[in-house]
Length: 223
Ligand code: ADP
Ligand code: C5P
Ligand code: MG
Image (tube, rainbow, N blue to C red; front, side, top):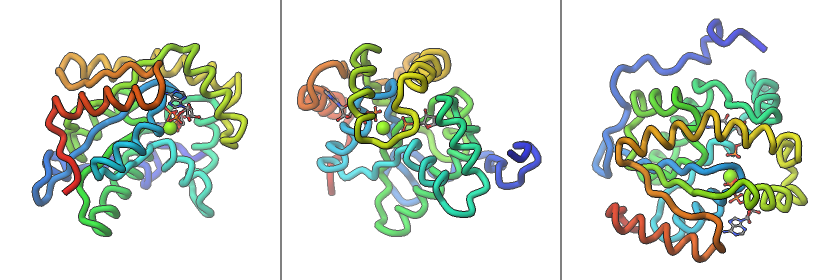
């Protein structure tokens, strides 16, 4: 693996102000972060939100897996080992992938509403993204017990083909979630920017609460 600090492709954008302004006007982007432990149901609920509110769903984990599998990627091996170990990939990679995906969606469809799923999972990602890309509107947080998440991940692992849906990786991912990602949720909570939803109930019941939260925060629907 090349040393991160010596790799020109791995330098976070040098901008000192965000690329977009928050909102829905020209030169803007509306970003909702979606957080919750592994298996809490983030991806599942994002599909509902996309259907009803017209957001573009960007899963940081999916983007990393795509980059990992892209022939010729210089980050493939690095991403693979971070994912297997349940560790957080250095933010420069993930922020660049997200920024590219946002630009490409805007170019393609003009849609400027983004659900950013599974990000930021570490404080440095949160700070840097809001500094160089756009401040988030709020964070949608799926609150779920470890035993529920464990059960869901083992079930998902029967067909997901994911290298990290196994006992050993799951244990590591839970640890990273508690130690590294929960502080991000707590940070946004202090800013009054968290919509918390109980994710232990069935999929429809979770989504009802999501819609309530979105309505309270005046999230715009489809145009
Ligand atoms: P995440 O993206 O947070 O890791 P997923 O959306 O992939 O979680 O969900 C993990 C697994 O749990 C999937 O197999 C999904 O079908 C299932 N699942 C999601 N939400 C619920 C729910 N509320 N009740 C039961 N199973 C769920
Ligand atoms: O969100 P998902 O469960 O798909 O993420 C899978 C893995 O991708 C994480 O366990 C982590 O290794 C990596 N990841 C990351 N930084 C993010 C999101 C995911 O390093 N912001
Ligand atoms: Mg997911």
